[in-house]
Length: 433
Figure 1 (spheres, rainbow, N blue to C red):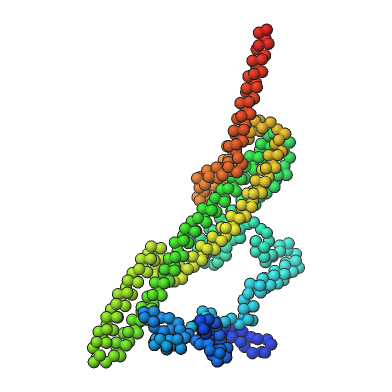
Figure 2 (cartoon, rainbow, N blue to C red):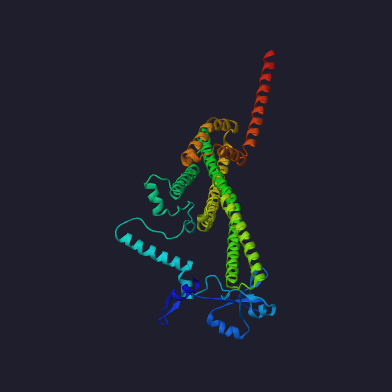
């Protein structure tokens, strides 16, 4: 395939008006323990300088790439006529630049510019921005490409994973916009009365609960993905090694069968030796296949799925994990901003009686917490987790040091009661006189 691609895949060179290969086969050659890649044209000069191609030689039960001079010195037998080379060959500089991320960005910018000019000419207010959410400084999570297959499934009434993921992303983004807008409004609101200040602080606390819930939800998702990846990654490595071992055993067995078939019947001992080796290889193949099938069964994969679906699932999980990590950073930043706003409200509360403010807040807190729970249930639906909301309440309690605040208020209340009692006793003594 690499040779075919090098032969047929070509790209024009405007300067010379000649067609050039997109890729060219690159041989990995050795000299004095150093390995370096050369094209066929470069190898002509490199060979004169002492560089050698590497071929596979049979060393015991293994196949090892070696230079012919080193292999001949050891008396090893060459088992392949194909020299060692890089996987994809050497890419043409023009093609490399053509396929680069930098070139893609230039094309996208040019496309957006042309599209926006046409939108302006036709009187449309909408504009296209080719940049990613991160480059634009947006905190919202981008949706994923759904594709015609997912849309067709949805039309038939079948829930597509991709469409379901996008629905959840849109709901999360809507909640994020709502919370961010509320935080700004609360920060700008005038809090010149005790009930207004209590309402504002409890509303902000409600938003903190939702931020913590979303962060907890994201972290639970990360935990699940990491657990799956920690299982699948080594399993894929093990599967690939088993598949390679099976291929090697099959190839070696086929070679021995061919040798046995071509061998004259008079070589009785060699026939017996080959038969024993073939039997041993057959047994090894069966053991390897059994081990591979057990591995796939433990992961709920079939033989047909393994080659294509196995690595794709891992890649999809890694991409999802990356998106969750980005979302976690964004929500953490929003949570920090909300905590700063809450600290500002604490400073404004200095002019109010702390006990009265505390009691006013406690009287409306249950309804505000219920509002947070209802909003989370609305966004997450069946995925809503009451235990996660309970953990979010504990997290907010720690962040706002509410235990310390409650203890301080109780001390003030006891002190006020003592002072009131002392004043009452003093008045009683005065009356008795």
